[in-house]
Length: 290
Image 1 (cartoon, rainbow, N blue to C red):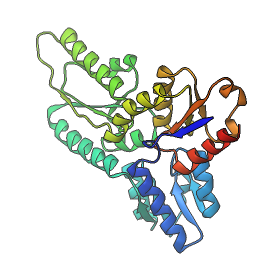
Image 2 (image 1 turned 90 degrees about the vertical axis):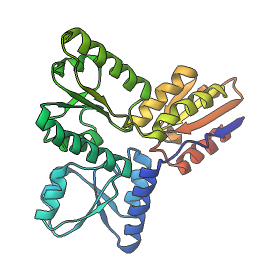
Image 3 (image 1 turned 45 degrees about the horizontal axis):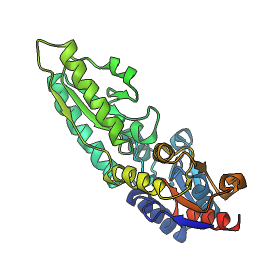
Image 4 (image 1 turned 180 degrees about the horizontal axis):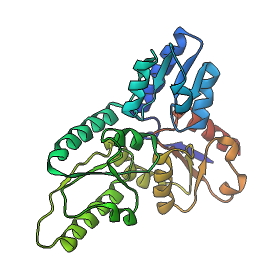
């Protein structure tokens, strides 16, 4: 059986930076606290926990004092920094630079829109770690939209600034943009609504769609390796499945089923931007045994 690993899959820059930061800190001490899963991949989290990483919740964080806590790539709410200062907690900030830049853009947009009574609209998943941090830049006043029905929350008589969570799909974002523009014309025909669109999807994520489509087309069976908590992973798995119906989602090699490969000779192994290359290699070796 011919098994090929997608060379474009694996950790994005932001995740690589967070993992390297954690490993560097763990080399100095035997324990490091991390606020939330350092990456949305359970197998990688378990590996780092074996080295001394301890995942904590925000409730636990609020009760801690005089310690060191790492912020993951998704970024954090402004309250996190306030609590750290109050409780004498040293923060090791591994926020992805792309996410930090987006937070700053939204904060500037929010400050400007307070003068014009504009609205900050964020296309993303409600409750996602990154979105929580983004909404925090607006004093929780941002309108979060995920699906078309959420667009009813927008006041089409007021200025609109639209941003996207960095890991959302470009096609879906463009569709949302079109619908918002159409509604603005229909619901407010006498006045042109000021709509400012910000292209804030990470380029690495945007490019992955075409790469996954091309990769999935090349093989009879696709094994997509990803943690089920990964927003990027679930999106890209769907992209692969739309191209190749023989696409299967696994978190680790233990999820593999022999029947998936019956009668096939070529298999492609790929993953999300939160999937480590070592895990994809591990899955590929197990497939070769099958």
